[in-house]
Image (cartoon, rainbow, N blue to C red):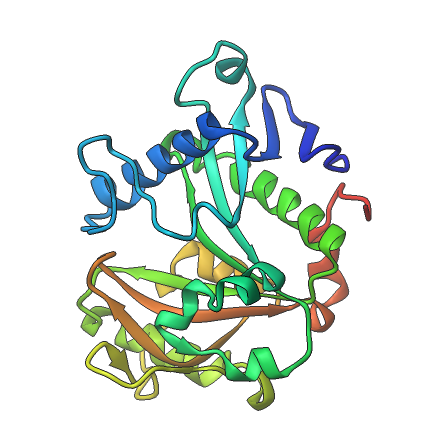
Length: 265
């Protein structure tokens, strides 16, 4: 993928482009896709969403960067559904100004803040169902790589989800993550205490990587690690784990995959 000049990659693939949202039309298209995926498809309540307009949004949207996968033909035609993939990105400098990351509602991020590393939080990742079997997510990841390299970010993190607010079916997979992929102690965040907090340790008998959602497995292949404990998000109808990727700990093979065709900016 080419460098993102003015936030745009023009050679991602025929018919597609990756860019940062640049106007209200882009943002509304991203929020409309998020509503279709999170509310209509996955059953989230999203109490803060605009259900009449079918837009999933919150107070962070005005401050974050929205990395978008664009259907170039629909974009050129002025269509309102030109966004087919989304990542929401919150740099540490912006979070400092806001006084919080999104993940602060679920996890104690003190170890990350104390690390002195450059941080960027990833969230609201979704792809239109018609494009999930293609290379859409790879295009978004290449765009993310360009963003991370340009910003000098060292640690990528966010909450990643298992479907459903009943954690019982996910207990073996959560235990497997706890047993095999916990973050180093110095960077290991912990779930906030309360009725939504879950312990992840336990018997992982019968659990296999196949029980882990595909996006979480993809982060693990990049060297991703998890925090301590899970969080039941009833508003989003998910069971969340904290995922972190320390770019300095990536294997050479993983780094090459992550930055494939993406020059340093």
